[in-house]
Structures are given as structure tokens and as C-alpha cells.
Length: 615
Image: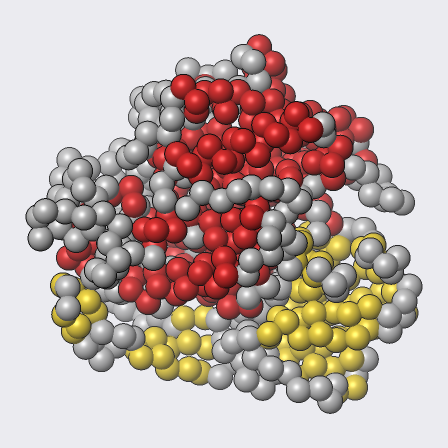
């Protein structure tokens, strides 16, 4: 698998506008989701109970006593709370949250200065949480590393934040040096989290390598980063060989014929791996849902880092995505992962961490490849699987696993994490990972809505009510004073777009979902004659001046038959099941239920605020 990383990077097809450029519009549905996060688990940092209260505030990352495990809560939380706080500056609590985040970031940087540039703690000798911190801190750099030309006074014009963003860039370079030295002495250990999640380093440092800070750095700094990523891919798990393995091309060979050393194609093999019955030949880390969801962007990232513009990377990445979904996919756009791959059965769960990591990988894969199918998948997950993670709209409680079709929430094996801590399917706050990592879902969805194509076009990739906070300046000198999207999508099929003070003609790209075969576009009340093809980024020329665009995406009821279940090798069981959809929404049947108040399913009584209902 190792490639020769040699900057400059191969170009991405699309690049999101800087984080602070687009904000959700107050009163819109998306704004309400972010606001619920701000006032729920995320904004209150209420991420723990029992003997280790406050997994964020008490994390050793920010000077707390810490807790057993990976110290993952703080970096997971930061990865979502940081963009959330920037997107919700219209809410006083958003500003307060950002200030608290910056206090923690400063502490991390101060400690790194005392520790030779190393970012954060090494918990149980694992450097993995530092990978996620690097990914998270790129959003701060993206928002604050320079003051926009002619910008009105706002959070982006604060010189202290610009200085902190530059400090973040330097911290990433210094950490690369420390981490490279560490990996030379302590290689990524097979079976460890860092061995499986090295792709996060690619995501973080590919951002740095594509930024203006790369050309401003010296050759020595650049060489360190290139060497770090080279060592990481050499030591890390070979995701490409695993994802592309099959019976005729096994990943590992075993003298035991009952052990199948290739990517699982059925539920029985998936469960054997997930339950570690095939150790040491096959490790459950290879089918762990979160690991896999993070890793699916590896093809797109390697395409960029390869610098040869070899598009076969992108073709292989598309094939890998399709293979995972074909063998383990669900109606809501996610794959089963409770915690490991589990086949097609709709009563098998998906961990909430895997939901948001899949959204992130699919969005990154779109931005690099331009393949609109990734956007359709992100949308399907965002409007179905992500809301299914929450017990109610307050976002004060979370489902560790979700299932498309399960008729009970009972406390019994099988398909639970283990007998000692049963019923991971039930509502409650069981592990700090999903309770903190779920936060990235909506903010990263919002911050990638408007992107700039390699040709300099403005592209709207997802539809919800939002507006630009400053003018958009294109590379050819075109300026767009403001852009506003107004819609009740996905509940409505009409999207209205206002564009004001355009200095000269430019091209606007609008995503036409793959499910919509008869989209229509009006420009200033005039129906556009061009054919609008499904599954494309439709290009529309916008003249100078101010204009109104109306996009109609008719949402017809669709019935999609589910493929057969694959319970055992070579066995396909027809289900006669179907998914009913309207637009991007999956329909569910309302069901009466029986509540047994004599059963308590939560692992700790203190896992929700007083009065909060739990399953």
C-alpha cells in the first residue's frame, strides 16, 4: 500500500468555503438542530456520570484528573463543539462556548511547549487522541487564520484569534516532529486504535499541506510532515488490501479452513470477527464500525497525496464504499456496526460514532473526487440515521446503537457489547465516545454546504436555510455580495436562493439528487430551458447584479426492495422487505408500544438530568 508522498497535492474537485463564511439561518430547521446541540449534551459538556464526572472538563487534555480509557471524549467533543460554536455566534451561548474552547486549546499548546511539541497526553502509551486533536484544530485554522478583506467587525477580525490560529499551525508542525520520533521507537501496534485510525493523520495533515501555510513553511518542516505520513501508512493497518480482499484474494491465509481471512460478506463471518473468535488471524479492529467509517476516505486522501493525478485511486474508493454498503448497508445510508460489521439484517445496530464518521468520510470523498453519489449518501444519513441517534429533540440523551427495524428494547444478548454490560441497544449514555463524538455530525454537514469548484464555480452541495456572513471572492476577481438559501427541505421540495451584488457573471452549481428525475430551475421567474440531469452538479450561469433562483426537486414516493439477507457464507435469504422513501426521507410505520416500568435498562442512574426520560 505505501505510496510515495510528494507534494504538491493532486487537486481536489471542490473546497468548502472557510468555516465562518456560512451560517444557518435562525428559524430554520437546521439552525434548530444546532441550537439543540448547543443547549444539550454538547454545549453543557455534560458527558459523564458515576466515578468520572465531566469527561470533557475533567480530561487530562485540559489539566483534569482524567479517566480510564483513551481520553477520547475531549478531542471527540472538540471536533464538533468547535465548528458548532463558530456557526452559532448569533446565540450568546455560542460565543461563551467558543471562549471556553479557546481556553482549553491554549492550555494544550502551553503544555506542548513544555513537552517538546507533543500535543496532549499519551494514555496507555497510545498517541491516537492526538490524531483527532490535529483533525479538530484544523477547523480553528480554517476559520481564523486570516482576516477576510473588507470584513465587518466579527469573531474573524479578532487579532487574538488570528494569532492563535497561526500558533495552531506551528503546533501541528511541531507535533509532527515529536510524533515521528515517537513512531520510530514505538511503531503503531497491530490491534491498537492508533494502528487502525492512522488515516486521521492523513486527513489533518492533508489540510495543512493544501493550505497557504505549507508554502510559507521551510523545507525542514515539510520534510518532517511527509516523513510522518510515510511512516504512518507503512506502520498502519492496510485498509486498501483488506477492503479489496475476497476468497480468491485473501488478506491473510489460515491453515484452519473455518477461518476466512478476507473482508466479511455475511453476518456469520462478521460476528466471528467481531467476537474475536478468529484471533490472532483476523482482528475485530478490522471490522470495527468507527474504524471502518473513518478509513473509507483513505482512497481519496491517498489520491491527493500521491500527486500524480492517478484517478484510479478515486475509482477504487468508490468501489470500496459500494462494497461495504452492498454487503452491510441499511436503508438509512449507514452500514451495520454493533460495534462491528454485522451484515444486512435490519435488526442489527449501528454505533452513533460510525454514523458521523461515515458522514465525514463521504463528504471528504465528494470534495476530492466530485462524485455526487457521496453527497446523496451524506444526505440520506444526515436526515435519517443521525436524527435516529437522539432519544428526543432536546439532544440531552443518546442511543448508543440504532436499528432500522427492531421490535423491542430489551436487556438481553445476543448482539450486545458483552454480557457484563448488556443492552447497548437501549437508550442511555453508555460510552463517552458517542456521547461526545456525535457532536460533529450537524456542524460539519453545515460547514460544507457551499464549496468552490476547481474551475472557480460556486457549488451548493446540501439544502437547508443558511446565509453567507460576508462576501465571496472568486479567484477570477468576481465578488458575490451575499448568498442566501431559504427552504424547509427535506420536508419541502422547493429551495429558494437569493444572490446579491454579483460583480460579473459566474457559474453556480446546484446538486441534483440521484433520486430526483424531473428537477426544474427558475432564474428571476424564468424557467431555464437546460436539461437538468439527476445525480449531477448542475451548472447555471448567473449574470452580474442580484438574482433569485428557485429550484424544485419533486419528491415522489419511492419503494426500494431490500436485497436478501446474507446470514452465512453462500446463503442468501429473501426478505420481501421494502424501504419507502419520499425525497431523502425514509418513512417509518407508527407503532404502539408497551412500556415495562419494572425494567431499568440504563447502566447508571446518573446518566441523564433530573426528569429526563430514558428507555
